[in-house]
Amino acid sequence: MEFGIFFEISVPRPFTREQEHEAIFNALEQAKLADELGFDQVWVVEHHFLEEYSHSSAPELFLTAAAMQTEKIRLCHGAVVCVPKINHPIRVAERAAFLDHLSKGRLELGTARSSTWTELGGFDLSPDITKASWDEFVRVIPQMWTEDRFTWQGNTFSMPERNVIPKPYQDPHPPMWVAVTTPGTEQDAARRGIGALGVASQSFKQQEETVKRYHEAIKTCEPVGKVINDKVSGQNFLFCHEDRKYATTTGMGMLQQFSAMNAHQLWNREVYPSPAYKTLSNLAPAKASKSNIAKMDNPREGRPVPQGTCVGTPDDIIEAIKVWESTGVDGINFMLNCIETIPQQEVLDSMRLFAKEVMPHFTKGKKKQEAT
Amino acid sequence: MLVGSSDNSRWSGVGAASPEKSRPLDLGHAQWMQLTYEPTGNCVHLFPVGLHPTTPVLVTMQFWDVKEGDLGPFKMAQVRLTCRAGIRIRALTTNAVVNNASVAKTLAEGWGYPENVADIDLSWRTDQVSASVEVDGRNVLRGKMDMPMPIGVDDLQHITSINPAVVGNDLRMLQVEPQIANLGVQRAAPDLTNFDCDFWNLGDHAPTYPVIAACADIQLSLAPVRFIQDPSLLAHKGTFAVEAA
Image (tube, rainbow over all chains, first blue to last red; front, side, top):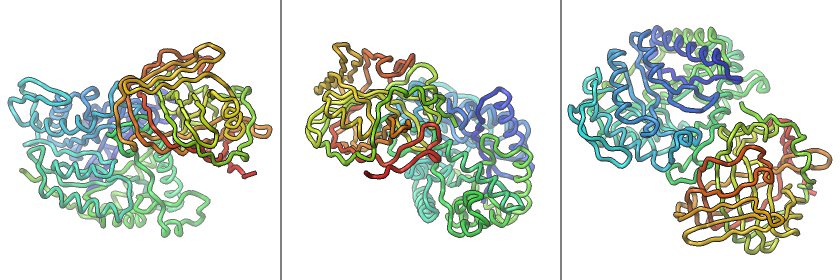
């Protein structure tokens, strides 16, 4: 089981320059500590115009800063929006390769297509084309990374023959992922030989089936790159504290804030009729388990913790991770804070306690990237 | 979370409603069109503090041409602003008109629609669907969609309305839930050629940036109002069930 952290870089209202600055630098400090504590990955999302929810519009810059102050942790784009008006594929390949050098081969490239009208409308984009452009991106970027002369005549972009430089530091190239927020996208990932980042909200029983089907499908994939990334990771929240009541109140505050803000995004599905978005693609909150409801001293003091959510004492979190482990996921990426509801020192203490008391219970079953 | 900034005085002119008297209405087959635009400027002050404006707010101009059903044939036009009550997507009605005084009265009494009568035209051709609204001979809205193309019936999601009205002695937001089954859906770019911001209560926030237009053949019914909201409170604190009369 691998453990990562991920950042939306949410900023509380009313917005001030100082608030944004603090949120960015708190996240950088957490990334540095995560590296020291032995976390495996730091993921940074790419979003645009999503006020309060995510001010992370330039993740490649954040990851560059993180690369300069870390040694081992993998630096992960989580994920690049693969639509030409937002990110031209040549620029994605160039920036990623450059960052791979700066981090001495620690880059992983997540891909996505955006699900909100706020973002796609902001770039004057039709939601209809995003799936098609994503598919072209994931096919051409590995070629740009590995071929000396590359040309493309596509549906969403074309280019004459050029040498896209620099080539990545990792040979043949960094692992690729796709952010999964819609059921079925994990199958798209499997068929292309790329990792599934997150699993669309569903029960753990369904997740187990989803992961199983992913691993079955990837055995017969037609890889888009020179390496197959056959990992599936889950998304979670982390607040670890010796005092269960405090952990629950604090951690659930974060979870509720995130869930509410996520639900408040203006999803394409809601306002733009299109066959390209059959679901909202949001991150619906999980439900509390009966055992967790029973654990609460007084349910009125806070909402019970949904099953598998890593909020609680170290023992609670070990139990939660075992639920995830049983589904077959290879790793979990944790959100550590939301609109700075948890003081920075408590976030750092939570990470330290997790590393000391929880991490040792789980072996690092790291799979090698399979060369094709 | 972003919330509206207007106090109740913004809705001082709205009519009275008795949501407990609303009853199920089968409106039968209808033709439906909606033009969606982004308005200029920060629209937060167009919402009460109990609602969350979406980012961005969208203006939807919606037209019904009801052919049959419990109220007989009528046409309706309504302008709404997207928002959320709690986490659920809603659209706040800023004004509405009906081309039949009796129907306007029924919809106002039970569901809190503004009781306005106007001449409404919804013209449905293969190459163009267009609509216009005239009040006392003055055009207040004209728009169209050219060359609509079919999409799947499940590709169009309808948004529940929030209608401000006085219930008893208090301003309330009525949650109005048309039940709409899409029989056929088409889509095109919207083309708005006239819009009277004052009439539709949008102030300086003219719909300027085109988003999308859709038209549909639908089966329409209107459910009784189940919930009303105190506009000065967020939905989770200020939503109340309507007791049937």
